[in-house]
Amino acid sequence: MKIIGIGMNYAEHNKELNAATPMQPVVFMKPDSALLRENKPFFLPDFSSEIHYEVEVVLKINRLGKNIAPQFASRYYDEFALGVDFTARDLQNDFRAKGFPWELAKGFDNSAVVSSFLPMKDYEKNNISFRLDVNSKTVQAGNTANMIYSFDEIIAYVSRFFTLKIGDLIFTGTPAGVGKVAINDVLEGYVENQKMFSFKIK
Image 1: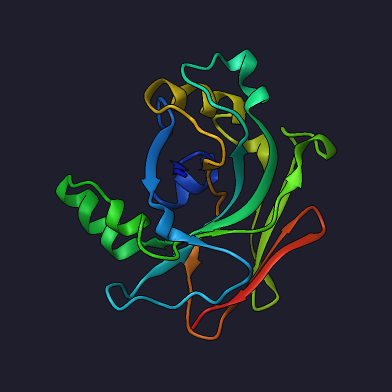
Image 2 (image 1 turned 180 degrees about the horizontal axis):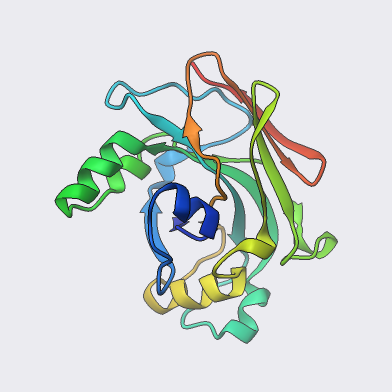
């Protein structure tokens, strides 16, 4: 099972990071050891002093595919979840400044929170509202209508490089409002008004 991340996929998030709009999807990977599920707590690692939350819609691949055409991409997923892509921002900024890869800032243990899954057929895939609350205050609110690259465009692009397999997860990007977490914070994620996860930072 692969965990594929898409970075810089919401224009307002790129503005807050002072980053230009990418000319193609920005792709990174997380190992399966990054997965955190069932509302288990997230323990702050000792190698970073600036762990940021990034709430994202997560697709689950349901069939084998390679070089998938955009018009057929919707056949390759029928469920989605809400997730948090935890990022060691201090490490990422340092690696970026040096021109180094930044997998260590994204792929560390438990950095990929994933909720239970919802059937895509019950939603308009290009108009899914979602949000993240920290300590009962909304800090991020997004809608898939605002993605730079749609679900189908992401799948078509990624499948040029990686064979997609059943169960692979794709984090599709985060809206503006990312920020630092602290011990005892409670993170709650919602799709529309349905609570998808609630867990604590320790």
